[in-house]
Length: 132
Image (cartoon, rainbow, N blue to C red; front, top):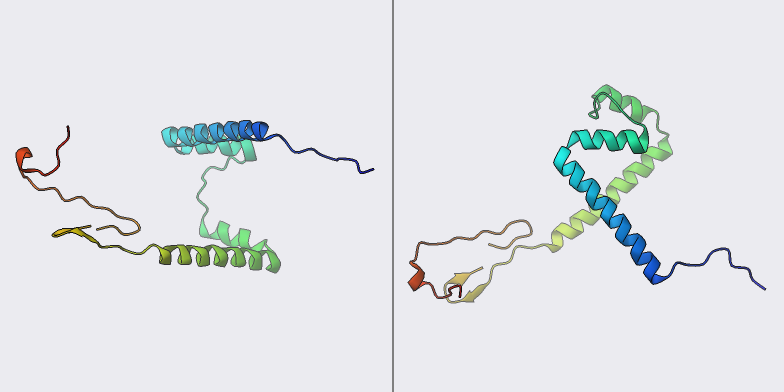
């Protein structure tokens, strides 16, 4: 008879774990948003025991670190970069600008990254749609 090595968590337990992770990530992002580099520095020390004077590497430091990598590691990094670039390129190509005349004279300036509203100075009484 087969012996179970591990039993999957119930859906409720997984949902509870997911909620805890989400709350932790949201709190971390709020902290970074509020305190910026100070929060990042504390997280780096806490999770990585990494407390450099500056997080920005100089070009000589970058070159030295790259020099420590094997050809295989460099090839793997280049491969991963190309995969990310290719995916982003396809994703970008799917986001096309759209221009539609929804009614005579009403043309709707949505592209993948911008939306603009142009409002005129018509008096409230002349506006076709008014808030109740």
